[in-house]
Image (cartoon, rainbow, N blue to C red; front, side, top):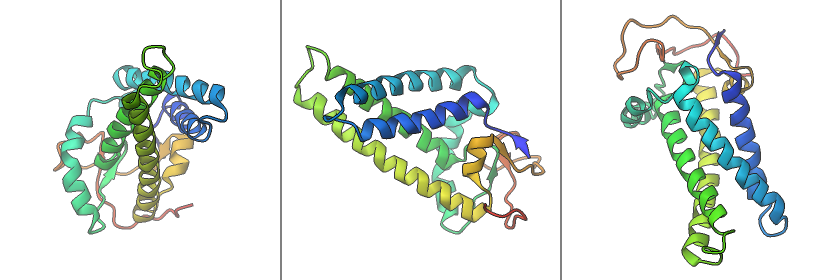
Length: 197
């Protein structure tokens, strides 16, 4: 096993998941709790952006651009069951990261705006907040399905990895075809010895 996800990343990941769900289930009836969850989400987004610049290797955003460019080919190969191996996020995961942070920021910021005197009751602010929040939940479902799919295809418990921070160790290739360094990319492994759970 090799350490991939550091504890600040894992803690912020699960905290963000908790407070996003809390905000989703507490509008109107529990307005104070809803606002608290929203403000906490803003803090967690700011932390994730900072950790993406100054955190450990697999927390940083330095490979996101290359992985976004590799995402279409990755998804095309995925249709044929070819996933490759990545110690950090795969290209689809990087695309999900960018989309999720962007939509969370839009949802949280417009939610805060709707509490101010200037923007309270403004239709476009309320509509943007509502649509962005709905889109976040759609991404959450896609994210969960994607994780489960990769667990099955790669026969590795990625949910457990997000708790422990560790993934299976593999031999690295000397070069890759997707523009990623050998620290980031693992060779394709069609069969894995370890069980899913």
